Amino acid sequence: MLLTGKEKLERMRDGRIVYLGAERIDDVTTHPAFRNAAHTVAELYDFKSDPARRAELAFEEDGEWFSLYWKQCRTREELALRMLALRKLADVTFGMFGRSPDHVAGMVTGLSMKPSVLDALHPGFGDNLTRFYKHARKNDLYLCFATSPPSGVRSTELFPGQQRDDPCLRVVAEDDQGVTLSGMKMLATGAVFADEVWIGNLTPIDEKHKAESITCALPFNTKGVSLWSRRAYESTVQHELDYPLSYRLDEGDCMLVCDSVKVPWERVFLHNDGVWSRRMYIETPANCYANSQSNIRFWAKMSLIAGLASKICEANGIDKIPAVRELLGRLAALEATIGGMVHGQIEGWEAWPEGYATPNRRFMYASLNWCQEHHTEIIDILRTLLGGLPMQMPASIDIFKDPELKSRFQRWWGTANLEALPRMKLYKLAWDLVGSEFAGRHQLYEKFYAGNSIVVRNQSDREAPWKEFHGTVERLLNRVKAPEFK
Ligand SMILES: Cc1cc2nc3c(=O)[nH]c(=O)nc-3n(C[C@H](O)[C@H](O)[C@H](O)COP(=O)(O)OP(=O)(O)OC[C@H]3O[C@@H](n4cnc5c(N)ncnc54)[C@H](O)[C@@H]3O)c2cc1C
Image: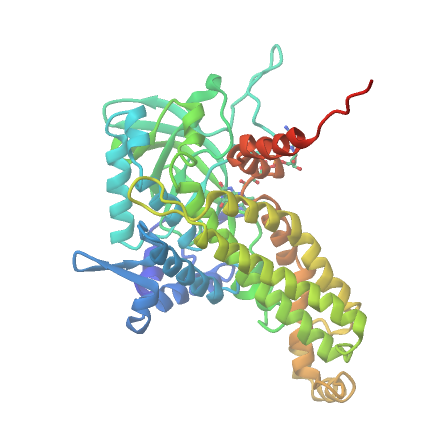
């Protein structure tokens, strides 16, 4: 099925428990901290369920339509179509929603292409996964995930005499019906608006702590589940013009808190296996399908950053200066680089696992590393081009309420290139991308969403054909003859 925005909003009113500080939010679709982002999610659903876009954003199987991101691709052409669909979806949020519904859907789709990995560990868990995949795509579920133990409290080694109610999420009991979970997991981005959460592990888990390896999925209104949100950036924005990104594009980040939560066995995909709780994502296309979405989303964001930089230089009247053009050229090159890397993953596709097609894994991991390495630098180029201009803008567009202030602003803040109001709009947007709290969160997101740099580079290290590289060196060394000294 292809859910509409209205139906998606209805699903967000499922009785889930969301805390914003001490306040418990009953309806995220109407609360001033979340309602605009909730409607952005609805806009995404309307966009992709539009019958006019079916050919590019959906696929048909056995007479039913599904979102294209659930497609288990079998050919290069299918991968290319899927990639273009993901780009169109990323454009709806200007690349600002990292965990849009296509991210975790990609991960589950990748897993569903090789469920034997799970069945080999525990007979029946692969079938659970296949059923969950079919359920999720049939109901057009928005899935998010929480896959890291909470930072700073990961060690369960206790000092003598120390008592600790350890907060790392784990299985605390199991019976015929399923498992019981207690503890916390970070960091469920998009959880406030999603339908279900995937609980798993993308960081290694010591066998000593294998009860933490539990991998399962559950709806947010499951008894004992609550979401503890960080500050919601739209909550204090009065006028969209003042903070255009914070206002409707804050996807939200929550700690997932589970207090004696019961999960039925049919929703369990892995249990008591620290090594495979992470390895399952790389022995299947899960990691690749999920993270190629991240690369495509970054590409969409680059289009906004490059365009904004250029418009700012035009507005400042500095766009013809050679040194400025050099910086703009650099941004354009960086935008084209990520575009090329996304296309390269498709051109270098892999016929893996048997019968399926996957974007090139090495190229995908390299892109992930590239995005992590370059985002801060890219934002800094934009900041450099901005100068102190955002600081010259009044605190709020509410100056327009006062005719005298409005008149002076319009007369004095306009330039030969741009009138005062569109100038203010432009610089407010720029500030939300380089300097606001929303911008700061994005800096952190782009650095850590796929794990710290050790985790991200480890993927490239693992997949690298070191033997082939060594062969290249040896081929050269073999030509080098040691001189024969007499
Ligand atoms: C905005 C945001 C959104 C996120 N969304 C999600 C989400 O939707 N789902 C999800 O599951 N997770 C999400 N994450 C969490 C993300 O998975 C973690 O932040 C990530 O795994 C990094 O873990 P950490 O924050 O504990 O940092 P750490 O791994 O503790 O790293 C912090 C610093 O310590 C350094 N460090 C750590 N270990 C070592 C070591 N052994 N040697 C040397 N240096 C080391 C790192 O390099 C880094 O500089 C999100 C994170 C952010 C910031």
